[in-house]
Length: 107
Image (cartoon, rainbow, N blue to C red; front, side, top):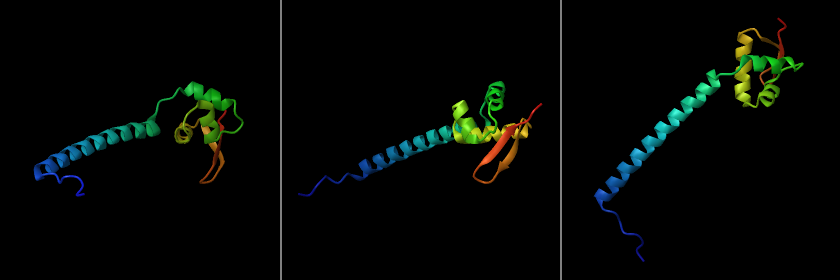
């Protein structure tokens, strides 16, 4: 009726040490994975010619249309548009906090 046997102090200590090691390892792996994802969102590489070709085919450019055209995430498309705007390849025509509409700058 009593249930499971109570572990000795040395067994509990050993289990606690193993648990801490496992948590540290998982935390380290999550930190490395998070760094990779952050780098992808902030500074991912892309073929500028392919992006410009896709943008020239569109009358107006929104992050969602660009994401669907290039098969990338919405956050990556937003970052891409911000980067292209810094390079003066696109300009923001309209927008608010929810939606930004861009158009390609004619060279």
